[in-house]
Structures are given as structure tokens and as C-alpha cells.
Length: 477
Image 1: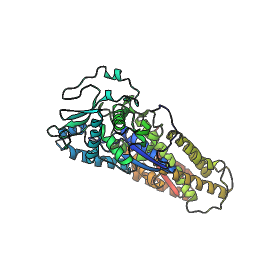
Image 2: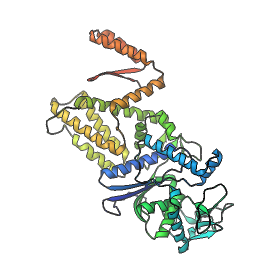
Image 3: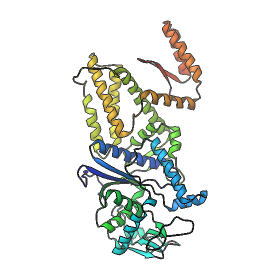
Image 4: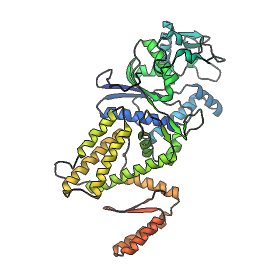
């Protein structure tokens, strides 16, 4: 609303209400939506980490023109199609490691709340009934466009009342739509019909968070008209501020163009997860500040997966080094104690996940140095420091939704996918690995080096670790 960063001051001290506009369930969710939901997943996780009691609400729009159109194309009932894609979204959300919100309301379950708000707007004279429809009168609400900062007169240029609409002026928007054959409908004081798009969020946010709540989020494309209309109708009905803070995720670009279903240039989340690990996709989303645009590309995904592989290889080495061992209490090496504070400093600054990942890069670099080339001879000091840094990673894991698996499991799954992509003969690789192990046992290091070279020519890297020798598929040149 103020177009600048603001200090977070909750409506109720220690508590926060967060409402995020969820999916319209007429198709599978695409990665642009997934980026938005991942960003707010991290926002909620971090606010809880900082001690706030957060109520997180993310809705399902299961009554909408797009759902009706999709149902007509498939021959399904709109309610059945919407229910099918709600379940598909839940599957995709779990795959992406998204937390389940505290409340996931559906429009179809909140018709009484919607009718109550529409009735208040009609009674106050800022909405009017017209042949079974009900419209919000934009001209009767002086603060309209205060969120999007648009000029009302400029918005009117070129706008027309479309055929079939019963509104008085072009900018007026539907709160209630009269029933049409084959469409879902409910009884109302203005005749049978269904809610318009914008009114649903006003009803559901008020039901679960009150007339005024703390944070309202969504994608940048929702600022106008959805959030503008939602804001206008909520505040006109209640006379109260709807949300203290508005947060919007930047666009995700595909080959230089904004990704959208209407343009047809979309990548579905489940398609992306067939090409890249879920945590790598989360890392990719979080590597850019949520407000900034993010370019989606195969190279970007591949780089993210290589980065996650580096992280998990580091964690494997650390776990092998300090797992199950005890170290005497004492100081830590260097400035190891600073990382968590630096991480929080970045996240406190408008949830700067990109900066936070930069801090993590320094943490992982220190862990690698302590494992591979310790700068001090005090093994207890090194072990204590590694243990402390590993614990920091566990704390960060709960905030970012990364590093949630056992390193060996993640690395094995990553290897299996790479083997499939590259068409490697695993039996041949294992044969060469066994032969190299025998050569090393016999101290025939020349033969061991030759076998290492042969493996390398196949696209295989081998690593001799404290737990034994492991191999992975080398990244393409």
C-alpha cells in the first residue's frame, strides 16, 4: 500500500493472520503459481521461527467461470472437475514440500458468508441488484484503486459493458451472478446464482482472520483487479482496514515472456518435478527475492540441482565425520557462531531468501574446509564446530524446506535420475568399481588410476570417503 518496506507490527501482539490467494482449480497448477506458494510457505515458516503464532489461510477457488468452461470441455460437472483438481493440487503441494495451511477454505462451502457481505454492501448503497446480478459500484467508493495506484478515468477509457452484463458502468464488478443453465447455483435474496470471483476472498478472510488481519499475499498479477476489488468491497462493508501489509510475488518468465495459462506458455509443476528434484526447484525459487522476476530455464534448474547436490554431499561428509561422536564443550572455530544471526538478518529484511542462501553458502564452505582441510589441529574444536554448523542447517531446513532428507537417500535418488537421463550401464559401472577396489586392496595403484580414468570416460565420478567409495554421474560438460 505504501510502496515501501514497513516494520511488521501485528494487529494482536505475538499473533499474525496471513491470507494468500490460492489456486483456481480448473487445471493443474503451473510453476508460476508454485513459486508464489513456495514464497509464502517460507514466509509462514520464518514467522513461526521468529516466535509468532501464525494462522495461515490459503483458499481454493472452486466456483468460477474458468471452471465452468473447463467442465463444459470435458463433459464433467463443474463441482466434480473442481474437486478433482483440488486433490491434484494437494498432491503437487506435498511433492513441493509445502506446509498444509491452517485453513484451506473452498468458495462452495462459504456461500452464507458471501451473501452476508453482499447484503451489507447493497444496504450501504455501494452495490446494486440488476436482473438477478449484483454489482459493486466503483464510483460510489472513493478509495477505489488505492492499492494499484491507477487513475479511475484512465481505467474507464476503452471499457464497455459487455453483452450479457447488467451493470450500470463499465468498471463495476460482479458480486453475484444470476444462474444460467448447466452452472452451479445457490439461492439468494436476488435470485438463484453464484458468487463473482472477488467476493469469495473477502468472505473467507473475514471468516477465519477477522475484518482486519496482518498480511495479504498473492502473485503480482492479482493486484488489479482482484486485490483492488477485494479491498474495496471488504472495506466498504466493514469500514475497517482489510490488511495491514500487502505482499506480491514477481512474475516467473519463460523464455522472456510472462508465464500465464491464458497465453498458453506454461509449465505445470508436476511436469517440472519430473525433470528436477523438488528441493532443487524450491532452491531455484528462493534464489531470487520473492518480489523480483525470475527467469525459468532448463539451465537454471540444472544449476539448482547441482547446487543441491553440493549441499547434500557436504552434509554427508559432515555426518560421517561427527555422527554419533561426543566432543567436549568449548568454543567454536573462527566466526562459526555468526551464521544463524546473519541468516536471520537477511530474512528479517523483507524475507530476503536470496541473501539468506548467500549466508548458507558461507556456512557450507566452512564445513567443507573443516572436513577436507582443517585449518587447526584441535580435533575436538573441529568436531564441535561441525556439530554446531550442522545444527544450524537443521534449523534452516525447517524454514526453507531444504535439506529435509538423509543425505545418502537424496544423493542416491539424484544419481538414479541422472543414470536414467544419461543412459548409463549401471552393471558396467559397478563392475569397474569392484575391479578398482580390488586393485587398491592389492596396492596396484596404477591399475586403480586406469580404472578411475575409464569410469571418468563413461561420465562417472568416484569419491573415496570415510564410509567407503561412492560414485555419481558427472555433470555434462
